[in-house]
Image (cartoon, rainbow, N blue to C red; front, side, top):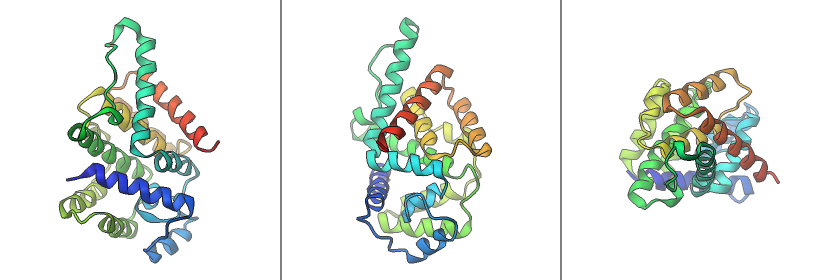
Length: 227
């Protein structure tokens, strides 16, 4: 599966929609979402995933304007800052975030990040059967990879399990990227979503100081995207 390619397509689609250059070929999706207050990105697969909450509008802008590479840059900065705070207590090797990896490793990170985004998007239970069908249709437009389409649909249908999602993290940097992406997607004013983030951080075994640094960098990235 080319998970990184799909993520890149999602970010490109979201960026075009935010800039007003894109159009939503699924007219039903736009009408359906407008009845709920409008999607964060005005339609498209990523917009359907993120829902209509104000907090997700902020995360959506960061993710789509910056894209996957920018997510890695923010994770790198957070991880590096945390290393400096810990001094000799942790390895000072350069963090291997997704923006610094060759294609095979970048693909592994992309798989984990996409799982994290899907999980965070489900945290408030807003994705119902109708919305999932619309998302599936949008994913089918973005990739002809039948295996990837099937995997994406299966991820949407799975019961939300932070422990299962966290098992995708095979490195500390990957765990940091997954948590960062989740922070950018959720609405922290929602109790269910805050509780999900807390449990995900526990399952990812993030050090409290690293968790705080990732959240701080997410806030700064969001603020910069609106500057």
